[in-house]
Image (spheres, helix red, strand yellow):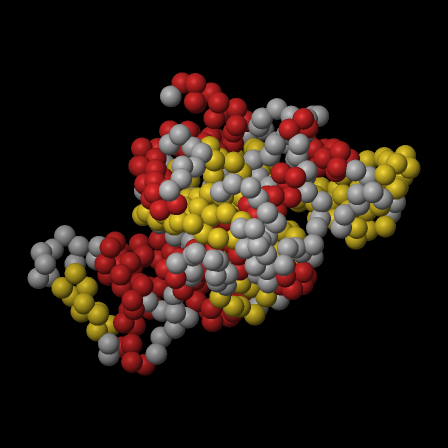
Amino acid sequence: MNEVPRRPLGGFDVAPAQPATPRGRYRGRSGPICALDVGSTKITCLIGRVESDGVLRVLSVGHQRSRGVRAGSVVDLDQAEQAIRAAVAQAEEQADLQVRELIVNLSCGQPESRHFNVQMPMHGNAVGDNELRRIVAEGRARAYAEGREVVHAIPLGYTVDGTPGVRDPRSMVCETLAARLHVVDASVGTLRNLAACFARCDLEIESLVAAPFASGLATLVEDERELGVTVVDMGGGTTSLAVFADGHLQHTDVIPVGGQHVTNDVARGLSTTIAHAERMKTLHGSTGAVPEDDRELLPVPLVGEDDHAIAKVPRSMLVGIIRPRLEETFELVRARLEDAGLGRAAGRRVVLTGGASQLIGVRELAAHVLDKQVRLGRPPVLRGLPDSAAGPAFAGPVGLMIWAATEGQIARDLAPAGLSGPPGPIRRLFTWLRERL
């Protein structure tokens, strides 16, 4: 199936492999950047801009408890619309501007990673932007599958006349140009529900970015991206993975298990409310037991009983509920990495991020189960970002801002309107919805 190059939903689709921008300095992008992280427990909206000195500034933060979203997917359009509207409105009021398009994270639709090798004859001509677009379009066409939509098509490197390892082949003269592409796609049905929700909010998705990709951009240093590292983003409803090597995203995956599942286990095991289970997990939760845990008693209000029905349970009981679920989560992570066959590319290092990664002892448990070096990843401190939004739980939205200022900017520079082609299915859906809502 031939595919005309078009403006992609995701990013990096027409960008050649390029050296990273120095950390803390970004290419200039005109106008505001609006990033929206749609999670299962919270919805976060950041509005910012790249200033004249190349520094990314956050102008405002909107933050709301998530509703109508489960495991990253929209399950209730009305509730999700209300939560998204509230988060965006809060950020707009603080920044004193109105946004229309947003960079949105993708953790729904069962995203999958695949690799393709694409080759095209050059007949002794120099490589230009058009040739790079054609080779990426060919890779997207090969990746086409019924019911799936390509989100990212990332060139991992080029081969010029049999010589591999070329990062940017433009202006090079050759007989044959080949590229190795990493394609990430997702279920069209799930993306349509997400698009319908944004259309009801009078908003458009400028670009979709795989959630672990964004988290990796926010938490990794350049040496980690080059040598090989696995990012594990532990969210409320999902745990997403991203493997970086040679400076590029090599693999992504999403496991439908997250911090909410730990909370639900605590609520069931102790017969208490979801709200109190979350409070106990946050204040007293841990993955490792100590002798004092048997003597430390925690008050537990029983679900359905009156306010005076409070039980006392040892902290060791809470730890005994939390640890098995997190062990299972990291065992699933290990199994997914083994099934992907990445081996050496995944490296010996793991970076944990996301709200659920802040639980005491998670780092040590991950190191034990995964048999790798593990550190906790925090996003960089951006100018204007409040301290309350500087922890691992905000790695995703900060990464979306960084993507818009770097990889997303490269994609836009190489995609003039005359070559962007017809819109993809999600943009066509936006047009259809706007005409009827």
